[in-house]
Length: 213
Image (cartoon, rainbow, N blue to C red; front, side):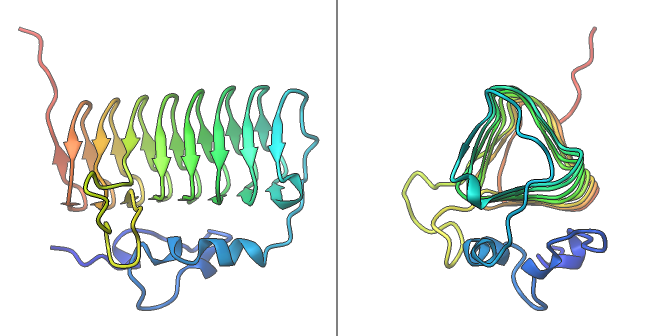
């Protein structure tokens, strides 16, 4: 098994919040001190907030230049949204989120207490809870990153809620479910309608395509 270390999953070379990771930490450790990082941040909005966008705790919300926020989006601080992102109508961002640049959150998608690296995309009707999405990760419509065990036991030491860590350029097909604590390596592909747990190695394919007869 590939070890769950930073270099096997994410490149932080162009990420503005690389300070979230420290050498030798577990891959998911930034989720443990995400709130502390946000508490030290200077929140600045570099765009005009459109009408019919709701900001809760607006003094703790940062939005980078070039970002587009459609009407009907709900954003709860503390939250950092990078440059040139797009948040579609009905998106819900809550309870401590950091997005890099060029991220996309689709209609009726919810992102909670998570970290998104550059160009990460969570399409419509997705749920991303207590998770880390790498650079250029794409979640298809209806993907769920489950973050709580049914027996309520800790998912990993120190985290009672933990969804998934998805490595750079990995792709997850529509309506897949990623169970709590799932780790997906770089460039992996999860086909639609899969239920995935444990560790998916870099470049691995999970599931298969349906072929018409």
